[in-house]
Length: 114
Image 1 (cartoon, rainbow, N blue to C red):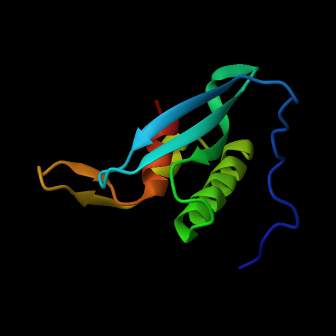
Image 2 (cartoon, rainbow, N blue to C red; image 1 turned 45 degrees about the vertical axis):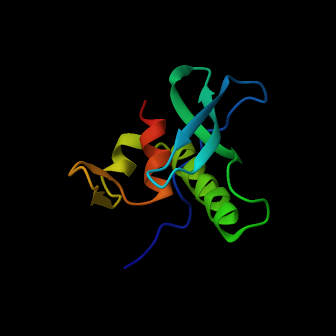
């Protein structure tokens, strides 16, 4: 298998853009604050996500969520839509028999689709 020498072009965002901070709660009760940046040319399309707060500072989980946000932002800036990313993420049955994302990453991507 060969890989292209360069990925698809990255969508550069202007220095000033709409950013919305949201709070999500995991099934385990963790509160996570995210900042979502939108493309001014397409104001309903998220192009970046940043972890703001929610896990103990310096914890392994905090670093994992920060890194996941970086990777999600790169996907968004290279043209991937949150809905397409969400289709590939794991889900788990909940005690009430509903289906929810199995990870914090899934919860973040689900928030990006709203």
